[in-house]
Length: 485
Image 1 (cartoon, rainbow, N blue to C red):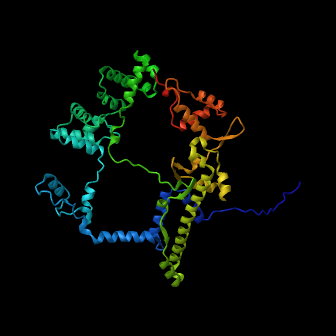
Image 2 (image 1 turned 90 degrees about the vertical axis):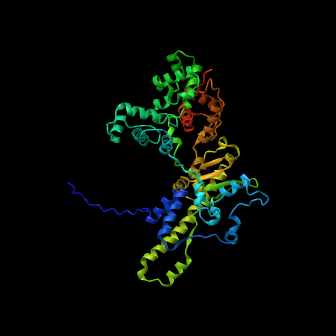
Image 3 (image 1 turned 45 degrees about the vertical axis):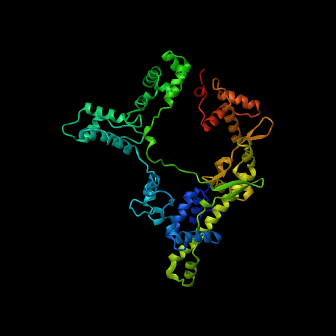
C-alpha cells in the first residue's frame, strides 16, 4: 500500500486589488453630479487646503463693477419715480406712493435698504391641506364643541385628503365632556366633506369619487356614475366597457362617456396643497449644433468650483515636520480631490463625445435613427474599461434640442432585420410608438398585430417583446385603448 505523498505546489498568481482610495474614486464616479458636488462640499468643510475657486479676469471685473455701481447710487432705488405734474391728491399716485413703502413706514424699498423682509413677504408661501381647511372653518359660525370635533378630523387627514382613522377612535381622542356620540362625529365629518377641495374627508376611494359627482350636471349620467362607482368599481378600473354596458343595459358609447367623466375626478384631492418634493434633472453635458456640426460641452453649473489653496500648501511645505502628519494627510487628500474632479468630468465629456459621434443621426431624425450601441464599442474607442463606461453613463444626463436623456439611453442591443442588417431596440420602440399613435381608436392594434406589421417591414420581433416595449412606453393594452362608436 502506497503511503500518501505530500506534494507542494507553488503557484504564482496575480490578484488585482483596489486600494481604498481607488474604491472611493470608483464610487464617486457613478454618483450623479449633484451628489458628487455635495461630496466635494463636504470635503471642503473638513479640509483646510481646499477652497472655492473665485471667478477671475473679466468676469470678476464685471461683477466688481456691478457691485460698485450699486453702492455708489443707493438713493436711486429708494422710491419709484413719480410724475411731478401729478396732483398729490391723485388716487393712482397716492396708491402707488403708499403701496411702495415698506411695512416699517420708512418710505424706501426693501431692496434698496438691504432688508429683504418686504420682498420675502411677497413670495407665495406653500399652504398645506390642513391650513386650507382650517381657514374655511375659522369663518363658520360653529360652537366651541363642534369646532373641536371638526379640527380633530382635519388634523387626522393624510396627505391624500383621506380620513384613515375610525370616528369612534377620534371621538375618544377629543376627551370632551359630555362624551361625544356617533351622531356628532357624523355631523362633523359631513361638514369637513363639504369643504374645498371636493372629495376631502373621504374614507376610501369610492366615497371620494361619490363626493365629487355633483360636478356632473346631467341627473341620468350622475346616477349612472354613482352606480358604477358603488357596484362595479373593479370593472371601471379595468376599463371593461362591454362588461359595464351589459351589467347596466346601456349602450357602450354612453357607458364610455360616463366612465370618462369619472376618470376626470380627483382620487387624491389632498395633493393639490402643500409643497411637492420635485427632483429636477441637471444635465452634465450640453449638446449644440455649431456650424452644421454637433458639439458637446460640459455644463459649468455641475462642475464644483474647487481648487487647492496654494498659500496654505506653501506655508505647510516650508514648516513641515513629523508633528504635522494629519495636515500632510489633508494636503494629499486635497490634491487627490482636485485631481478627481478634473478626471471625472473629463471622462464624462470624453464618453459623451464618443456617444455623440455614433448617435448624431438620432439628434437629426429622432429615435428611429438610433443605432445599436454597446458599452464595449465606446470603451474601446476612448480607451477605458467597460465597467468604467457603465459607471460614467449611470445617472449622467445629456441636454439636446430633442430633450434631456440619460447617457445610457443611447445604448441598446442590436436586433436582426430580414435584410441581414441590425436595428436598435430604441428604434423599434419608436416604430411601435408611431404605430400606436396612428392607430384607429375604434380598432386599436394588438401586440400580435404590431408584431406582424413589424415583420412586414423586415423587423423580426416576437409578440412578447412587443408587449415589453409597449409597457416600457407606458401604453395601455389594446382593450383599454379601444374606443366605442
